[in-house]
Length: 102
Image (cartoon, rainbow, N blue to C red):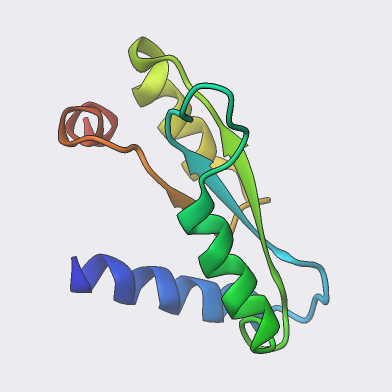
């Protein structure tokens, strides 16, 4: 877990240093609860980071993808290859992580 968090932070710092003032976009590929369009714990974390000045002066912005379980692996590959995102959070279960890692 610590290695994954360290990699995410290093990746965000690298992306932040690329000379843009645009927000660092993070894709969130996790199922959302019924009647919700975001995850409050992630929104709180982003708000806290942004209120503290962001990452290297750049704000974070979450973009939610609510994939169907049977499409998780394909969705994860698409998001990982999309250069618009500095990071991808998810999927939300061990089974989905193993499927996406294949």
